[in-house]
Image 1 (tube, protein in one colour):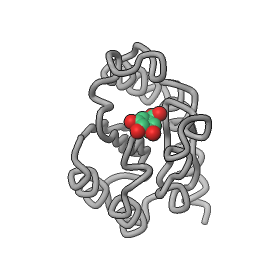
Image 2 (image 1 turned 180 degrees about the vertical axis):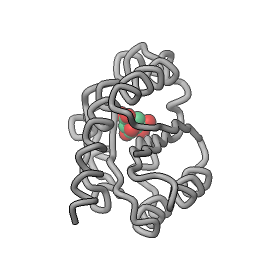
Image 3 (image 1 turned 120 degrees about the vertical axis):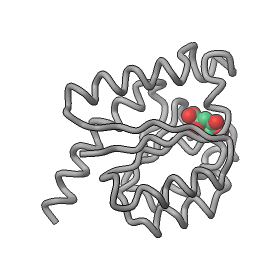
Length: 148
Ligand code: DQA
């Protein structure tokens, strides 16, 4: 089973960016934790970050036929990107939306996710653990996909 982790804009700055909101772990720290747990679960992961909306769209499109599940922290594009939403629908790969912070407990503009209706679920507010919870959920999502 293969899971593609996609990370959107400014997540390359984790660790130094608003640590009171996003914590002190870097994206590389989180990736290392994800890879360790993935190896226990016998899941292959790819982990990408981009500040560019089009690059995230390209990676989503490129996942077709290669990945079973996408875990997406679209960062600010969560709240704005119709292009990313359309790409998720176009590829038809089960996608789990994640956030480090609880977007529903923050500013009003963050409470709306454009991608949520086309994702199979949302994990929001558990810091780096959101990534590990999504990895666990990916396994369940893949099992129920095969049972269909
Ligand atoms: C975020 C929440 C978004 O609202 C924000 O734009 C981010 C990070 C999170 O992981 O909590 O960049 O996706």
